[in-house]
Figure 1 (cartoon, helix red, strand yellow):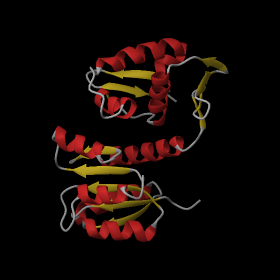
Figure 2 (cartoon, rainbow, N blue to C red):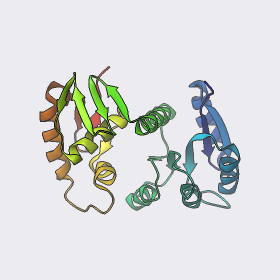
Figure 3 (cartoon, rainbow, N blue to C red):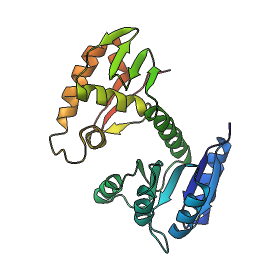
Figure 4 (cartoon, one colour):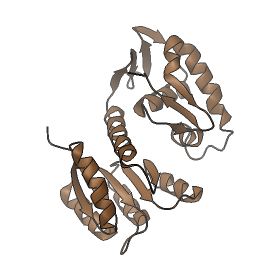
Length: 225
């Protein structure tokens, strides 16, 4: 199997090298671009890039414009890398279709873990049926079985469980869950998630423990395996 290609876009050569070294150790093929225009050219010339690590502040074309251009043609996973930490910047990124948003400085090991998790999630998202820890999800039939027994879930409970499993091992804030499961036009109280999680855990029985509370933030699906 060919190594997956990752495009690293950052005007700082030192940052590109750092990220490339850690990703290469994990077996990824890393392509580099020092500005937005070069990133666009590389992306459309290569055609088989699996994920993009994209800085915001760059010469010629910033990360926002690169993201907008690529999103017109592709749903390739994009992780924004930026020194900015303001909420409005993060929200703008998600509205443009960014998959993750990581603020500098960051741990390279954590970055690699996020890359691997997103690629795993992307693979699951394109799969009609998958199994994790005895939980089987059939997305086409919208059916869930646990240890072979069918459980009855509401539409939102099904979407919530699917989103948790597709992001296995990643801590998800309540805001991010609202954005992905309830969509961006939902302005309700984030506590609605807590209510749905409580019902979902109850229906899942012992497997409900896989949905772990991250106090002060949100939730994480983790089988502990």
